[in-house]
Length: 72
Ligand SMILES: [Zn+2]
Image 1 (cartoon, protein in one colour):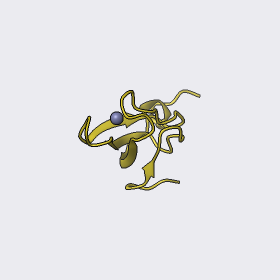
Image 2: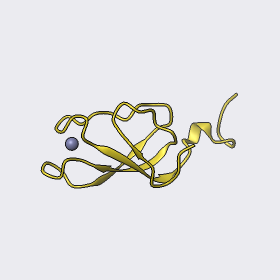
Image 3: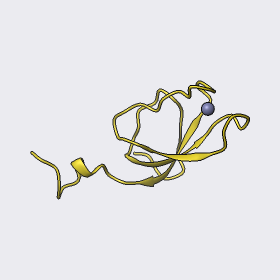
Image 4: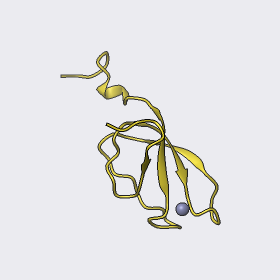
């Protein structure tokens, strides 16, 4: 299980859906936030390749997996 503050690289599997802060090489883009979805893989950047680091900021389960909304 991952915790807030853990750092991930492109190619790794997303451990929790939620908000991640992305750090690129600082020349082409400042830090920003993205939503990543559990089970997908963190992508490489079109500009700095394998450089970005994804830092888990806020875990938020995807609505379709939430117990009050999921279909089984
Ligand atoms: Zn980049």
